[in-house]
Length: 245
Image (cartoon, rainbow, N blue to C red):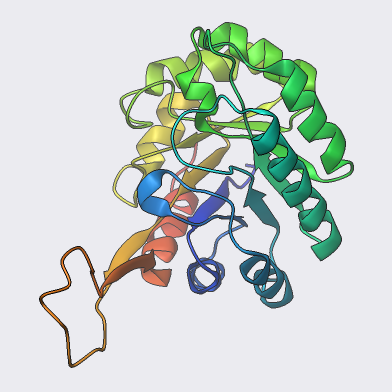
């Protein structure tokens, strides 16, 4: 039986290294987890590439919010992709929609062309599309290797029926990777229900600051942060490896 692929969404280099330690197969590196993810810094990408032994994919998203991008934002994304190629990344994670909720195929073709030999994942802009089966066919024509999706729902568990439909529709033309709300307790059930051979999770936990002094008058400043936990990743890996389907 083919081993299922576990990709960990990593909001920092420390998260990526924890994911690798816990048994992840691939990293998606990004910044600004609370806002759905944006492109990480040059330094983060460079250090991650130096430190990781597993494949590194980088999110290409210039800002939070919707997935309709103007010419300025397109230029930023193209330059970020060029940087990923220069630094030796294995792939990039892209996505864009037009104002009517269709895949912006013209823009996405530019991004795919800029990526050249890099692997391509289409991110959860897909879930915001008007019609997911139609969007799937559009993404396939772009030449992407996979789509990250929750089946258009808030979590992969809630969207499992649609994910199963998308997996059947895609066949061997493209990989549908389930993501959103996945943890050690449900990853095996989601893999079984959807037929997804790749699963995506953040495996995050709160890291408590070591600061002994905190200025409580600085409203909105939180000294604690979230980071991928190697033990949670190991739990995901064990859950995926512990069942047969």
